[in-house]
Structure formats: C-alpha cells, structure tokens
Image (cartoon, rainbow, N blue to C red; front, side):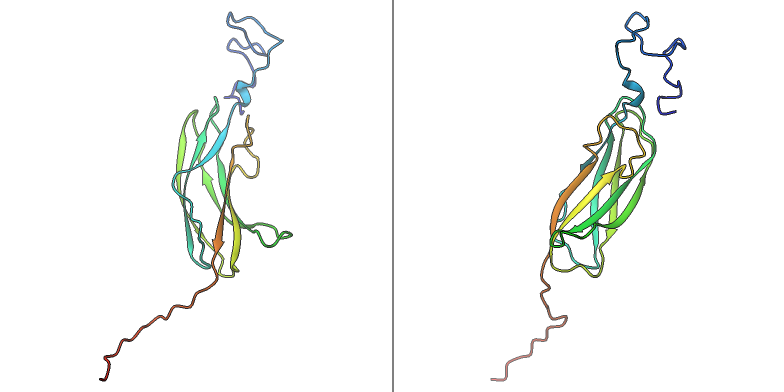
Length: 168
C-alpha cells in the first residue's frame, strides 16, 4: 500500500485524517498518504557536443522530496532531433532506481551509448525519472531534465601525419 501500509487509516485505526488532538477531521485532506515526490537534478555539467557512436556520461541525482518513501522506479534517457519536427524521440536507455526513503537521494552515474547514425544538427536530450508514471507523486513537474546538444559537422582529421625532413 502506497501510504505505508495503513490503508488510509489514522493512528488509532479509524479511517480519515485526525486533527492535533486526535479527533476526526472530515474537512481536511490527508495528502500524506500520497506525498511521494521524486525529482531529478544534474550533478555535473551536461555535455553540449555529441559524437555519433560514442558514449554520453551523465551524473544525475534522483531525490525523494516527499513525506513518504517512494516505490522503485526508473530513469529514462531519450534523444530528439530538433531538425525533425515530426520525429519521435529515440529511447537510449532505462536505468532502475531503488525505492527511496523520505529525503533520500540516489546518485546515478550513467553511461549512454549514442547511435552511430546521428546526423549533424541540434538535439534535445531528456532524462526523466518515473517516465511511465508508476509512482503516485504530489508533483510530477520536477521529474525531467532537458538540455540541447549539437552533433557538429564531421571534420576529417588525418589518422597519421608524417613529417619528413626537407631536402635543401
């Protein structure tokens, strides 16, 4: 049960919220039973240049800002091509996150493989905790980080440079 196993019961076993004296208080709303709130924060500067076929390193923190423990969930990482307005984002990875106690944080060091076929241009990267809305939260608006990044036009660099002495 998401409310800590009491099924919405007060401390003495009666249903409903209680006032400070323990009396039934039907006019108030007990939000404590659903007061889980997961949030996502970047723990380091996010990369703004991407290279096809390489790995992206993300350092993120998932925080439970609510008054109740959270259920286990996940962080989903997606990539959207900003030049393709009709295109759907590409799912890059999903990482599990264990249940978090009140005020607990999970630090995640993620390694994401970027697709080989990325075209030069602008992209939006998105990391979202609880992307499938499995955790009943008091605030769903703080679950996402987005940032823009660029895949630069390919610059050909010789793999081997030979310097020969001048014949003067």
